[in-house]
Amino acid sequence: MADLCPRFEGAMGIISKRWVGLILFELLKGAKRFSEMETDLPISGRLLSDRLKMLEKEGIVERNIYSEFPVRIEYCLSEKGKALEPVIQEIQNWADEWVSADNAETSHA
Image (cartoon, rainbow, N blue to C red; front, side, top):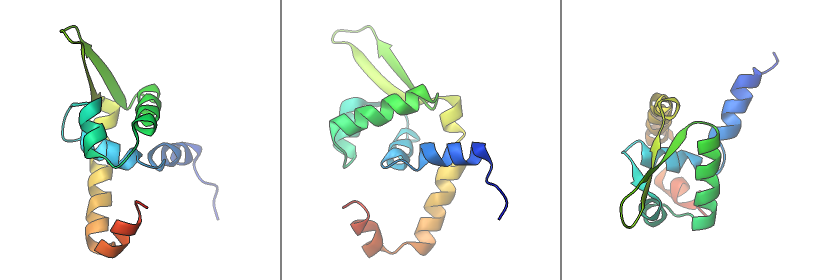
């Protein structure tokens, strides 16, 4: 088998981390506050924070701070993150065709 491309392996290492796909799926809908994502996703606040920091470090997510009272912080996809939209959509298309509802329910356990 031919050697895998290091860039491909690196990309898979980022997007295959647990919960990253769901975080990206949520942020494709638009900017979100941390508390909104924490409510919408079946993930602990600590792990969500860790994943958002990792995605921000990778340049996929941007953290925007608005100087209001109280301070408002929102997360959104950067251009690099938005470029993942067709990838996420194709994974959704594949899942719609090939992943059973029973299998999808047990994957979060």
